[in-house]
Image (tube, rainbow, N blue to C red; front, top):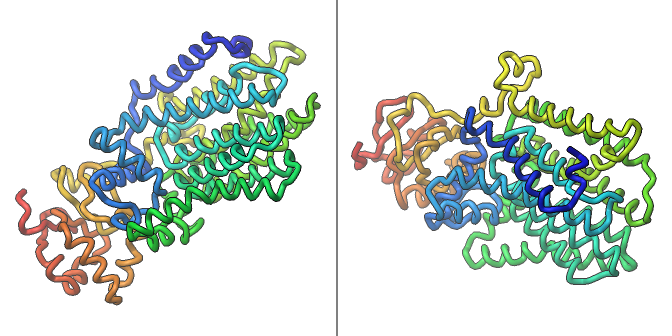
Length: 477
């Protein structure tokens, strides 16, 4: 199989696509993929943005602005387009793999050419269904991959100011999808140090490109009256915000076990790669750059607490690059082929472990679908009603649209935890009273206090049957 993908003909590209579909599509046919918590949050943001809400002004949610507007555009195509989310996630992974493969081949970063980088990238991406779902991290990582091509030519053709600025600009766009990705500016800094004649001046150009998208976004939100919330919800919380938002991903214990196989392959490949002499000086310098890429990827992974949706994608570029050293011809000549087939079989076993009774328990890897949000049985009769959930459990939103800007309960507590402050009460009254929801699900038992403080807004709600569910008196069942 490796011999086939060492070529660069259209047949290899078609084979790569068929292999990817063969690994992914049977799962959809056998079991299907339930909606993940991250996807549910993205769908809710997309609904609100499509409905005219402005992020950070009409939304209490920490989703980065570029990702929020993309979710809004997808909702414009169709209401809650889950299939479109899955198709776009697959397309982005394929685009990332092919782009990284193209860049490494064009720059002669490794003695061998072909589609081996894309092959490993796509095969390893199938180990978990976490990458079957669209996430801000997956979207932003695409910009990071494209930024790499703007950094490499500086070492081969002299410094081109437009390339350096473009690299920073793309990393800035990645940050507007998922803020910790701006740490990849550190990779750009190392590239400048390794390859630049005037490192300080070159890094300033990179930094200007990085800050430019944020300057544009800040100006936009300034004129829209949302700049304070943009700073408060997107920039100011720092790592704490991303750790809090990472609860929409898989549990840390499961995520670490799923990362065990990629990590083992990466360590084995690095042990082989760092001890392998390379010919041109550029190839050795590029290997240093990929080590820095791995360190930054680990820092971004830690920024999301290790549980951010799509976290595995951060390890794929260094894994795909260093794995090339494992596939080099050696003695015996068949060893790389056997090793890759073993890797392919291991990925298939982990992905389809639910088909073998007892295998999940043996591997201590419960299926990712186990942690997907399920409809609340007590609310089975509530469908397509404008709902406001006073609490962190968003399962009720699986079958109902959100009626208020308070999507992220962690951020909503900035108001609801300060009901003794006049400004917080006024904001709640303005946000909820402008278009009262049909139903309120009071998970935090705040409705009695809200009725006392804002009787004109919350006084019109009566119990609707299920516990903690209240219906607006003007709502027709």
